[in-house]
Image (cartoon, rainbow, N blue to C red; front, side, top):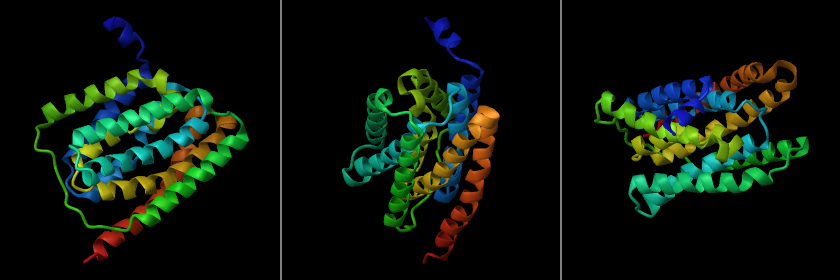
Length: 250
């Protein structure tokens, strides 16, 4: 059975496991919330998971952004508002993502109209979420665990998530692989994480639009490269604006 599981891993799955483990481990050792947020929003897991799935960006990927925002706010609600232990808050929010994704995956329409309607709705949702979460100064946190212990724990979590890609289908590309670690390591600054996630979606939605349009002409790798260009063009000024708020805050 163990060999069968390993054979199910392709080259992109292995790369996804290694790179996302490195990204999440780096995030754990950064102290400032703004730097954690920047590492969190880099769409490396999205890119590698998309290559592992090997399908065009479609409506499942777009709605996955909405579930990602729901997961992030769910962790904050459970932990900060309802005073639930952070691990329980993360697990419950992740299970909600998985359950909703598994229920929605077989029901989603595949038309172009559905894709663009979903994209517009998700963009509007992220914009509203960002406007409703005004800036707050929050404390930083750096994991006290040594890297030789932290990295294998993170790798084990990512490994289990990759195994679930058939169940989640297109939703796997937006599953919060790094977000699971980020929520724990940034448990003292979850408001900042929620704001940053909304900003990510404001850049991620145009990225998906560009990749979707480019796919028929240049294939998946090329379309994702185009998407990255669009993403970075939107992310740079948005992050600068958010960091200026941090600098100017009393």
